[in-house]
Amino acid sequence: MISSSSRIKQALVATMRAETALRTAVNGFHERFAPAKTNYPFVTYTRVSAPYDYDWTNLTLRTVWDIVVWSRDPVEAETLDALVSSVLNDASLSVTGQSTLICRRFDDLGDRDVDEEGQPVYMAGGTYHIWTDQIIPVRQTSSLSAAAVLV
Image (cartoon, rainbow, N blue to C red; front, side):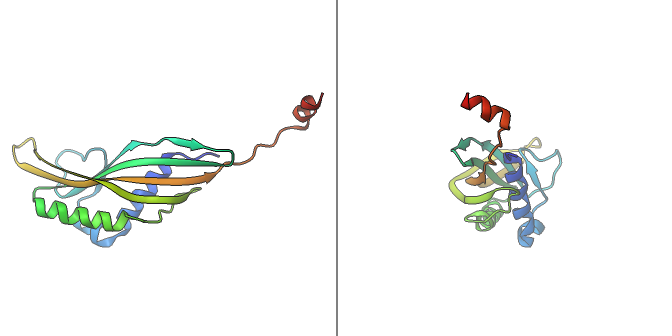
């Protein structure tokens, strides 16, 4: 059975949550957006792309993720982003049915925004490539189809 990027997402979040210092420093890990009224700081993760690359024996998923820390304090955002980076850069993720080829940060993200109350919010994060490999199972052809090919 061919896997999808959802298994990579599960491994990504599990890896971040497994780091006690990170897990206790933030108010959750949220996909794309945090729920309204979530206390700062928190982490969001967004799948940017997930192309599949097939060859004769393997499937390589070349996923790209944006992972961002949101905080009211720019120093706190950058400090927690550095912790996220230390946890994920070159991590060997435990992706069910797949082997990790690379998990590496390749770009920085950062900005300042204003929330619905007019208060400043700072974001610090990065874009990560996570590539995994999966062996494609060989399909067995029935003897009828093999016989038909020979005729």
